[in-house]
Image 1 (cartoon, rainbow, N blue to C red):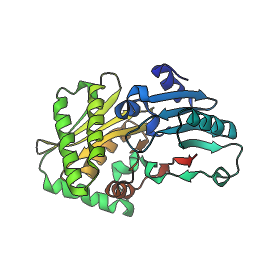
Image 2: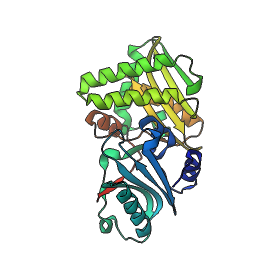
Image 3: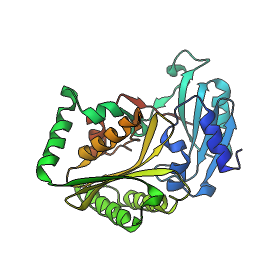
Length: 290
C-alpha cells in the first residue's frame, strides 16, 4: 500500500498508460476525504480504492499498462478486503487475453472520458464543426466586448467571485435540467475544495468576461507537455463554445495536443454537448461486478 501521497503521484507518472481523471491526485482531493482513498502499487499498475465516492458506490479501480490474470486477481483480492462488489479497469493493452469477451468486461459508457485535439478545437474547420462555428459567430454578434485571463489559480485574488459564479451556474443547470440536487451540491463542495487547495496544486484557470461580466471559467491541469485535463468548466449565456475555442487556441500555441474533458456521468445535455465537439477518441473504462 502507498502511504505517501507524493509517492503515489510518482508511481502514477511512471506508468505507460493514460490515466482517467479519477486517478489524478487533484480529482481525488476535490471529491473525496483523504481517509476514504487507498492506493496500492502492483506490477505495471496501480489499484485505487474509493470508499463512498460522490457518484455511485464504493469501487476498486485498476489502472494498468498490461492487463493480465495476475493483476485482475490482485484487484479482486483488494475488493474482497473492503467488501466491494464493483471493479473498474483502465488499461493500455491486453497481454494474456485474445479479447475482452474472455474477461466478461462491460463498458461503463457514463465514465468514458472525452479526448479532443486542441488544434481542431482552436480552428473549428470543416463541416463537422459547423454548429460550433455558428455558436462562436453568434457570441461575437451578441456581445460587444470580450476579455480573457489565463492565470495560475493560486494567483487569483478574488476567489469569492469564482465561487459565486459556480453557484450561479449550478442554479441555472438545476433549473434547466431538473438534475439531482444532492449531486449539484457535491459539485459545489468539490469546487470549493479546489479553490481552497489551489496553493497545493499546480492548477491553471481561464476566466472569460463578456461585457465586463464574468461569463465563463475553465480550471485545468497540465499533465505533461502534451496533455491537458479540465476539472471545472462553467459558462453562461451560450458562451461555452467561445470559451473552449479561446482555451484551445491559447494552449495549441503552446504546443499542447490533447484536452481531456472528462466524462458526462450520463447527463443527457452534457453528453450531447461533448459528443457534438467531435472527440478524437474516448478514454474507456470497463467494469465487472463480483
